[in-house]
Length: 121
Image (tube, rainbow, N blue to C red; front, side, top):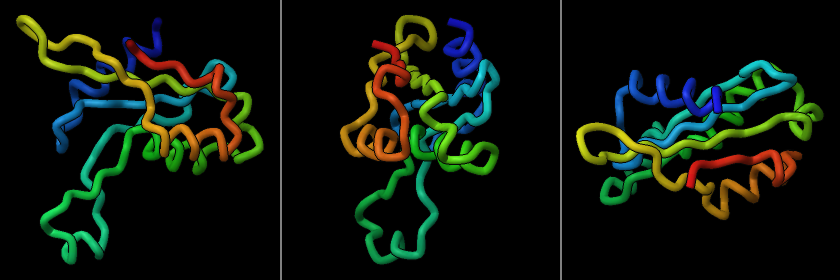
C-alpha cells in the first residue's frame, strides 16, 4: 500500500531512539494528517525513574499530532496504518506491528473503528 511505503520512507529518515523502529500514519479523507514514531518520552518523572525507560508509542504520537489538525469527532472517519521495520538480510524488512492493548484501547476510546486500524504482520 502507498501509505506503508510513505511510512517506511519516513522511518528511515528519523533518528531511532528505541530498539523498535515503529511508525504510525493517520489518513483522513485520503490525506495524511499525521505521522508518528516510537520515541523516548521527555517527562519530568523520567529522572525519578532513571532505571526504567518511558516510551511514547508511535500510535499515540500520531494521534497527538492528528488532534492538532482535525477534530476528535472526525477520528472515526480516519484510517491508522502502523509499520514496524526490523533488520533482515541486507537491509530493513517489515515486521509485525500490531498495536499494544493500551494503544488499541486509547485509539478506540478516541473513536477509531477497529477495522480502520491496519498494521503489518
